[in-house]
Length: 324
Image (cartoon, rainbow, N blue to C red; front, side, top):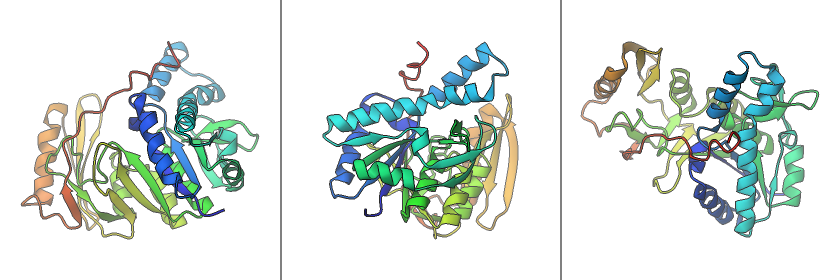
């Protein structure tokens, strides 16, 4: 078997049901060349949060195995729906359960640490189907029970599987044009970086940027897997290659508490400057911090064109499918 492609699609890809059809068409095109494809999927946007809200309403301190069972069900739904969409597109695909991922976790079932990735189960799945659809953020423990690898850990699943399967690149698709010098929804002058190093993206994630999961960046660095952060259609662009690129400055905006937002200016030399501001002032503070890091706007080293204006993030109207 040739080395598989590993593609990960975040929840924004499935904000609407036709997102499954769009992703299926993309995967079909990639599989047409004859290379096996592993597709790692997240839950539809908003689903896990909605499940958590329901669980909190019923039980403030639920048993961890029950929490893991509930909170991983959103990805299971995405696996089933994308597998069905691929079948409708004429692509035979195997729906992989948590036990078939080869990912072994340890610790609390609803927030386990990933220990290792065994390629054998997925190789068997790919021997039967040209495409394997895998639930992100899931694995099993030593007793074979499903565990959750933490919230927003589909990146980690995809990178670990890419490393185990020998894939040199892991493609991460999301609703932004790539790794940007700031959130383009808040800072219109933000630029999309063409190439950047692991350390910059890890720092951005550590300070609250929702670019690539922090543990996924560390796993990719150790496994020698390059990351290609790519935009979902209809966004255009080449995205960002993460790995051997240069360091970059960036601005990160993250909630601090119910009243304050933390705005962090990350310098390319490793320095970080933090400011706590009231929520209404965060956007203006972020824009000014970005201008200070990148005076003159367009001259950002290693950058592509301006990041396009993006619609606000929204929860999928189908995120209640497991509740109602």
